[in-house]
Image 1 (tube, rainbow, N blue to C red):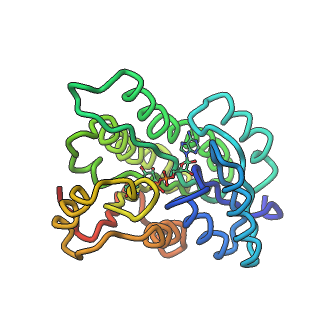
Image 2 (image 1 turned 120 degrees about the vertical axis):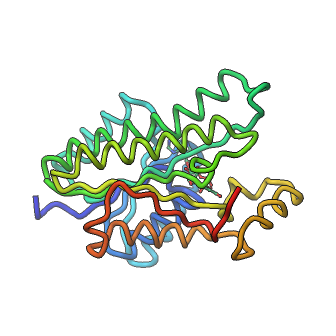
Amino acid sequence: MSELVRTALVTGGTRGIGKAIVKKLAGLGYQVYFTYVSRPELAEAVCAEVMADGGAARGFLLDASDWDAVADFFATEIKDKVSLELLVNNAGITKDGLIMRMKREQWEQVIQINLTGAFVCLQQAAKIMLKQRKGRIVNISSVVGQMGNAGQANYCASKAGLIGLTKAAALELGSRGITVNAIAPGFIETDMTETLPQDVRDKYLERIPLGRLGSAQAIADAVAYLASDQAEYITGQVLGINGGMYL
Ligand code: NAD
């Protein structure tokens, strides 16, 4: 196993928080595999940026919530080919709406990608990590999974579900040297948040004691910490990175 390349897998790595995580991990010497679902030019750009910095990254067009496609991906690209040291379940979407107006597709798509997708990848990664008797898994949840947010019942439920998944997986996998933790970002400056109207942003800002939005880099740094030797005794935890945000 030791001759295999030390690899991290990040879902949704073409932009925002995922891209920052890919670049951070590549800078730490991991070979980084990342998934994406659209805009292959962004994936190419991420790989080029990583390479220019002396690192190694590969993008895979893969819907991280497609059970069969994910199983095929792990069988062909991961198993016996690399040493999978870290999985970061980062892929996520929002489809906001009030409960009374929420359509079935809005509910199902968000749960499917944010929660089921994380489970599918975690299950496949755990199969490999159990054999290695080591591994780290980090799930990107959200402050709204801890506190709720009006107009985001689907998203909040998916992110709260990720916390439950994190805690259950930490219990099941801990005895085999695998840690599983969640990061709950607050309000982070990315494509996901840039479309919010100014009045909504201002309302959020009032609730952030540090008085500013967070950066994708802050989340990437926390992932790096949870993947590091310094975090070897941390599992089943939710690390809030939110400027003290309350909702
Ligand atoms: P983003 O929309 O900028 O990027 C999301 C990434 O996920 C993209 O690369 C996209 O291609 C990918 N993706 C979407 N569906 C996918 C799928 N089915 N399979 C594989 N990849 C898929 O989002 P972001 O703001 O960078 O957020 C990243 C994560 O952090 C998400 O899980 C999000 O819920 C969470 N988060 C974000 C914030 C914030 O303020 N931006 C706050 C809390 C939590």
